Length: 410
Image (cartoon, one colour):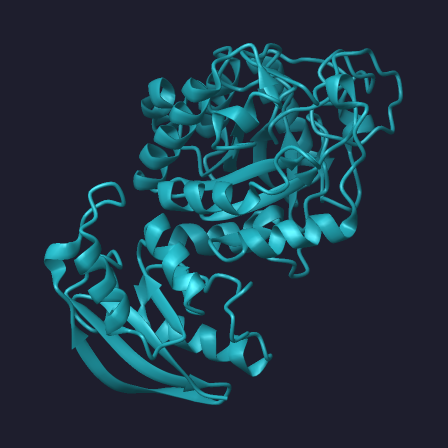
């Protein structure tokens, strides 16, 4: 089956424009064997307004311009456009990069029978690798997209406090050294102790390529995480630096995060609707948390930081809100999405964990807007080694008894 694909471009070489204000839409015909150029179509670029300001006559004209196409690829696509295109059976993919590279990737997708006429769940076309993303793909075990990977990471538990409260976060003592979930740690380290641990870790496990901080509290609630990254960067500049946060303080900490050279940032965004978020998070006004999360994602993604978003899937609360959340964070600049199944505990102990079918449905909805991360290992805040392989925690940490936080934003 051959289909027409429209790409938003100013030069016919790269996908580099917003869907609403691209001067041209370049149309190709593609099937599982290859693709060919058909024509360029001139668009009224004066219609390039935000969703709130959108002139709907222009908006309708742009969509009508590609009415015979089944896929559109643009550097940015507003929520209103995504909704309208999807209703019309058009896959709306938000990716920038070389047109030939993007089309070649889509041809491979077609060859596998991936296209569905209703555009229900096509995965995003991965953008061409930059030096930064190439390094992540090769050296970060979480970004290898399911390929065999023998790279390791060390998580440093240096963040003792949190600045919000999540209904799924249990702060009970847990003496089980084998427990595996985000936030669990045997001890909290100082930045200098963490640096010494990295020295010992890379000596016994040279496969470690990533230093991550994901708890046990929030990384920006205290200065310890950023100070640790400064120390690590000075002594181990080739190690990737990976940080997770709830995002409340992202706007005011953007400059510091860039200065310490964070390569990948994970932000836990459980909803972008305050009424839904209010059922999951307390101790902070949900409107403020959502605003700061999205603003922080915008600033850091614009600065070249790879942003991954985590969402804890809570059945009956945010399970019907996943696609809106994924679309919103993708518009803000996130490029990877990870859905974490709820661990029923604390204030949400009465709920059931989501089923495999519910998780898969949520992933398919999110995958219409950005790449979905599918091999999360629920790593501890003091994990060391290759995910799913050998763990060196017992050899490096004095304790493996969790102190209080048993969930983080990792």
